[in-house]
Image (cartoon, rainbow over all chains, first blue to last red; front, side, top):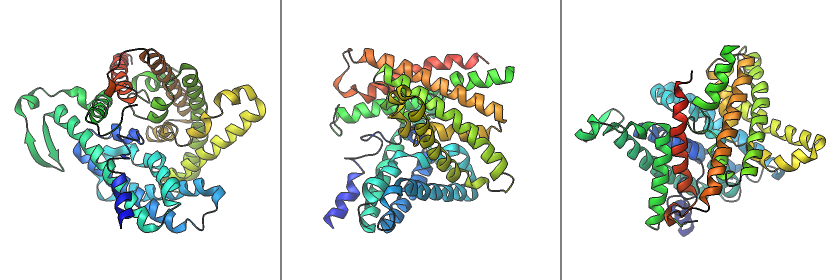
Length: 204
Length: 191
């Protein structure tokens, strides 16, 4: 039970994929313009990671060691195709705004890294805990980046069509810079430095 | 002809792979510490990107599309690119050992580089023809190399600068990328 808890909590802070390990930055920067996108991306990412970890951990005795990487990639690519088609079918708006970054989950280094480093060496239950932990960590990072970008870029916060609040002076003169691609680099850079300054993560 | 030139500059400068499309960020932050390795990485990416586009275009338009199997593109493309990188690596090792020693360690990393797969998808999504896809790949690769070289030049100087403790390493690189991206916005009026 204790190891389960450890595997789960590792991905959230100590080995946060985005802020500590700096893996999978591409989707984190590209689709973090709004909270909706962040939630959608986290959902798609966590599903693929969870399913890949379960399948790999179940098949770990059967997969020959020499061809394990190609096998992992095929498993992940198949799962990504499933997610891509599901999103296109059920939430076309979200699928449209996430665009290319859904199929690109396949080359997300975090998922392959977890399959190789964790799921291929541990049982199913531990792999599930690991995947959910990493998913939560990824989601928290995505939410914090997109919260800053949406708040400063539009002056108000919306989540799936429901209006949360508006800051009037900011909504009249939104800082469009935050919605531009450069804004993403800026926000992540500042957040990283902030976490180091607060002592959550260590400096280089 | 002017169309091809427009595609080249659009991919290289205006819609720069790294700064605007957020593709290939891992090598952008990982391999941009030294100028020489940044150049090798850029050339390796350019090479693989060109070959990958030349191979994935016919596969999609002649094999998948006629059979209505467009949904298989993610699986097929990643397999093709992974094996392509292996073939390129072996070919370079056999034919040019100097080049292999310079590029060798970067080639395997390219398989999981989202820039290669991303450009293959962009070519399909923008319904480029075969020649246009090649030019787009060339432009994207050239833009990637350019930004990587600029970034490594800045980071070599940055090592000597007095950076605040919390900003050392990646955070300051992200801030530099911000400024670089703002500068590249200026190319927007070109076409």
